[in-house]
Figure 1 (cartoon, each protein chain N blue to C red):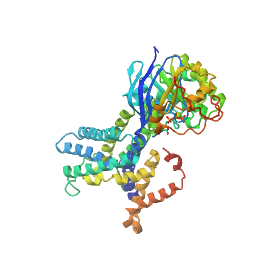
Figure 2: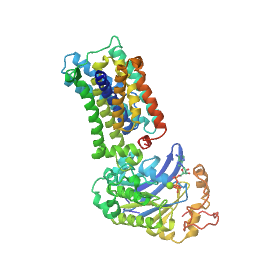
Figure 3: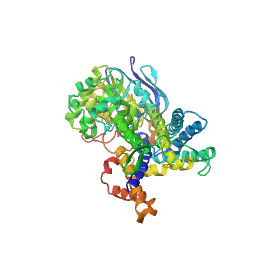
Figure 4: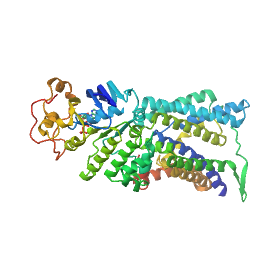
Length: 271
Length: 290
Ligand SMILES: Nc1ncnc2c1ncn2[C@@H]1O[C@H](COP(=O)(O)OP(=O)(O)OP(=O)(O)O)[C@@H](O)[C@H]1O
Ligand SMILES: [Mg+2]
């Protein structure tokens, strides 16, 4: 794939001494949404934390717009153009909405840009972010990423615990980011929803990429997805990654449309 | 009576200043800094060593403050570089180690309680005004004004400036602050440097009253931590008020015959009562959640 803005090659990531993500290579292109799918505990968040520099990359290279950032501390990766919407709603609770945005402001980013995207935030600009509803807090976090004038935005489970109308509102905003030419790397528990907006997808299992390809291949292919999420991994991968695996007790989330509820298929879906 | 109120105010302003330095460090870089007074004393003794050689006092003060800033920045850099991932207890332990080391070095360089008293310049000894028959020295006003200036100034800095907002963000969510591009290590070292300089000024201000030997000054950290506790290690105005009230109580108890001999214990009792009150979770609930 050419024209990628974020490029990972053979990236491995550990938490403490525990290796979690193994030899991941992926490309993220501007003006599109790239998906990371996978069951709970597959290592999706760890992969994003590794890209953002919050946990250690033990090997491999990460290029952002041609610059090798894998040795940068977190804040320099951010300054190099990496935005990150973390898994739990990480507003600065004691700062107001506007202050949350101002601390992140960089480059060409400005408040108007954010308020145009989320008019409801402008009305609450002087309210402490801790007092906002969950959906509004997530808007602040998205706005904070946008105002930092990013080239790539990583988004981890933006929809966690939010009502469907809010989720589609936020998804629309993600579409607007993409419209601005920003590259988005998205983790989303609702696979159906994500596949609607995504262009390319990577499926992680036990910290390894076991599928990469266009989203069309997975759209509506529930059986296939289920196999990718839970099915028997290729023997080698399954053994070496064993300590990483969190036992997967239930499908991705209650009512997740992508995954049927029958048992795992003993067949690998690697491509 | 009035005399002891004035005396109490003098101590109170000093207590407030010491407490503010500790609270500031804790709020901004999340370290309980046991070495604060020792670092300030180092800066102060650099200054007094220079004035002893005949340098202009103000110039020496600037050099001393810079020395205090550099020393604190070094400590801050070590904490950021090697203890960034460790919890507050470990960082506090590191500052205890630094405190012990600085006290040893200080005693060696500058002498002990009996041999090491230096003549610190006391430019604010002149009377500011008299109330009735009681003379109020300028130093009372200066230390109180300095304490208010720090409280108000830091409050404004934190809420009104971009760098202040970034410091708040950093103290609330250190890793997310970095995620949004805030250069945490650089900011933290800058905060340490500023606190080193301020500590030096505070120690220089109190040195003439306390005899001016290194050991006494370095050990002021005890008082400082106690006052910081009154502000729950969080609130600057509470720390300011706590320091002043503590000073006043000490002054008053000195004037009452019956409890005069026990006046050293009064601040301790006050702190004990306040801690007990706080454990019942009243106003400190919000102040203490960091
Ligand atoms: N600090 C840690 N030390 C060791 N292992 C950890 C640590 N944090 C997480 N893990 C493990 O790493 C694995 C991957 O976790 P991660 O949070 O990346 O998964 P995920 O794909 O984001 O899951 P979810 O969908 O539930 O968010 C899990 O098995 C988890 O138990
Ligand atoms: Mg996760």
